[in-house]
Length: 143
Image 1 (cartoon, rainbow, N blue to C red):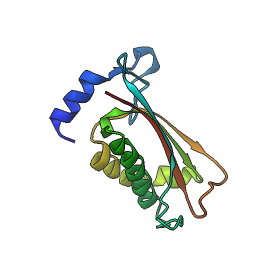
Image 2: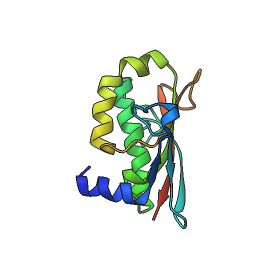
Image 3: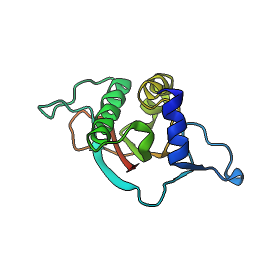
């Protein structure tokens, strides 16, 4: 993500990080969208291929594919990664998520740059797609 895109993001969405909550790392406590923005709700995306089967067992690989699928929806609606305002990641193993964080950071930077929406990571017992270790859903506010 270029500095120009990052500057555009900063003008469009206001980051809200109250000091009493502490400095967030890898997420924002809140993002304030301007009046008149269009809301986009992105359904949960996994690393599913065209046939519906999971394309890799590697957690970081699944994360990258699921994130790319989320961003494909955002782009199809006319948005960019910096328009994502909220993201929830459902994982079947919090240990796999934590162990993969260094690789996830690299994937994140390639796709999202330095933009961090409000986020949550939730461990679940299973996901609908067989073999899926992560599912990502998101909201975006488009100009």
